[in-house]
Length: 237
Image (cartoon, rainbow, N blue to C red; front, side, top):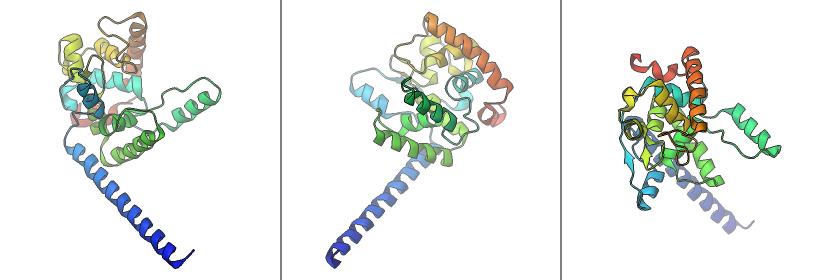
């Protein structure tokens, strides 16, 4: 390689390195900002709003959410939330094994991954977005405590019909604050999280009703085994 070519390659590598450092600095500041300020918006909400859909969302702290909903969401979405560091390796391995056996792809995302996706990224299933999701998952697990991750999740999660966040969902579906949700109501809300625009809470269909009953039993296990203590123990809850 000629000296001139080596010089060009060196300058290119330096430029790429500088861009990488700027990207890391900006994203760390971005994630750090939401450690202090509760996220109240997402790219999905913006996209839906631009498409003409009415968006309803109300930001609340974790202390304004029923313990029952915390238990229900952890029971439904990620029972290892308090112990993993962003990724459930066992679930990922099982999902890959199922895919290899022709059983189709299934979700293996943790609450942390879903929060990273909902707060910082666009909708989609391409590899670029999945890579960015993994990067932001690592960042929020490193920079945020677990209660902040769950707080963010509960404020931007979608519940169908333009409803985002637990408070808006509780008000629309049950006419009450998220703070006052009963065990059954919390289980119903958590039951539709995987497919909130197809599954109904008011009234629930047979599948959602059965899933909610199953979640109620799992919620008791989550509470009994302390699987939500990393968030419910905060502030004496």
